[in-house]
Structure formats: C-alpha cells, structure tokens
Length: 350
Image (cartoon, rainbow, N blue to C red; front, side):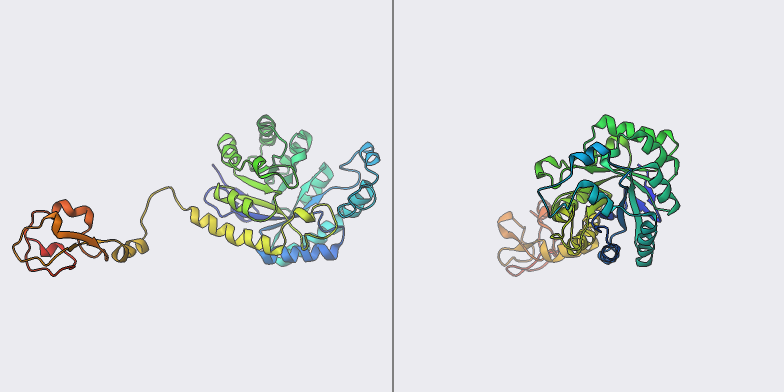
C-alpha cells in the first residue's frame, strides 16, 4: 500500500497518525473564536485544522429550510436552519483569514468542500488535501471536480455501503488521481459503541489498498486511540474550546486537553505497535541477568561428585547455567566444591 502525502507529511503504512482537529462550524461564525480554536489546535499538536466550506445556497434546498424553521433544542440551535447556516458560513475572505492564522501557527489549513465553487476556492488556497464529507460519497460530479484538482482526496465513509465506497474511489481514480485516503466513520453524534466497528479499518485497507483513518464522533479519547492501535493512519476529531458552548457540534467535540491526549498518546500507541517480527531488545537481554534463574546447588557438593537432579534448584540471578540446560548438567562431575545455594557455571563442571 502506498502512502499519501498531505502537504509535507507522509500518511499511511509505517507513518505516525495524522491528527485533524475538525473545527467545522464550531467557530459559530465568530472569527475571533475561530482564531482561538486554531491556536489551541496548534498548541495541542494537531497536524491540521479543518473547516467546512459551504454557503446558504450551496448545500440545502429551499424545502429543507421550510421544514426546519424552529427547534426545541435551543442550546444547539438558534432561530431557523437558514439563520444558523447563514451565521456559520465562512466567506472567501474569512477562509483566507483562517488560512493565514493556521500558517502563522504552523498548522495546516484544510476544509470539506460541498460545491464546485468551494473546491475551486480551496484549490486556490493551496490546501494540502480536500475532504469529502460522508454525505457526499455518492456525489459523483463533486468527486470528479475534486479529483481534477490533482490534490489528495480524503473521503469519509459514514452511511456508505462497500459498493458506494468502491464507486467513489473508482470515480476519483477515473480522473487520474490516485492520491486517496478513506476515513472509516459512523455518522451518528455520538454513536453507540457496538455500532462503531473499528475492525472496518483493516477491512477497508485490504479491500481498497489505500490508507485508512477514522473520523470520530465518540465522546472522549479511548476510541480514536483504539483506532490507531488497529492501524488508523489519520484521526479526524471534532474540536472545541468548551463542550458546553452553544452550537451544533460542541457537545461531541474534544476539548484542548483531550485533543492533546489523542496527539501525544496516539504517537505512543503507534510507537508501541512496532513490528510483527519477534525480537528481544538489548535492554531485555540485560534484564535476563537479573530476572531469570540459574541452576544452584541445593546442598553443599564435593569436587568429583556426579550431579543428580535432587542436587539442583533454580534461583535468581540468571548469570549461571539456565534451567532449560539441566539435561546437559545431570551426571556431570564437579571441577570443584560448591557451597549450598551457589550459582553453577559451566566452568564448575568437568
């Protein structure tokens, strides 16, 4: 399986996990808050701060607006759907402002594109990749337009069948773009644990031979870290400064401390995966000398006396003859006297 290069970072087999702080719409349309989110994502060690590029006319049809004119949950919603979409959309200038803040903080700026116009905007902003949201995995015209930019394409797979995932990959490859990564995803906020099916990560890697990560909608840090342990090479996690803040996704997002844990412990989990080849480190070889046992004299033994099994015990340290060599010791005669409990070495035997 080949790696995919997202900006200047290789992502895929043998590479540490790439962590995406999904700011999405958690800026609440406030660019001051947006800047603080970028700063916090960078401070936590994320590779990228990701946004969502849509407008009130590019994503939602009129009949959907008319169906959602008010909500009972006033914490997650204010006014109508149209009111929130207009408030949370980012203008091209705000995209440029967020990109500049990201670059100043040393973190990649990227976004999900929801229309061809937004793809073109992100292309001009020189993003390291373009994200396809789960809802758009069957939006083949959008996939083709993204593929033609030549930029890496990261595709979330929530709600999709294997056939739909294959169709999306074939569509991108059909435009001559082989730079594809998938994100296993469950498009429920948050999902039940028994619906997450992290073993899909390895299955998708095997089925499509592309790097596979995990777009996480769970609470806390355990599941994304488990995903890394199962081979996820990207982690996308919703990110907020305050999970109690009003807005769409704050409640299911990681706070700065949790994102920092995913970054730090994700590196540790990746390092701990190591290799399938069985090796014993030099440090463990040294440990053998203290922790393993050696054959010792169970009683005082005389020079020239043949050794019987009843004459032997096995105790620490492991500096003498190991107990798995006992068959080579039995019946041998001693080259000198041994005290009770003395560690036996090969030079003690004739």
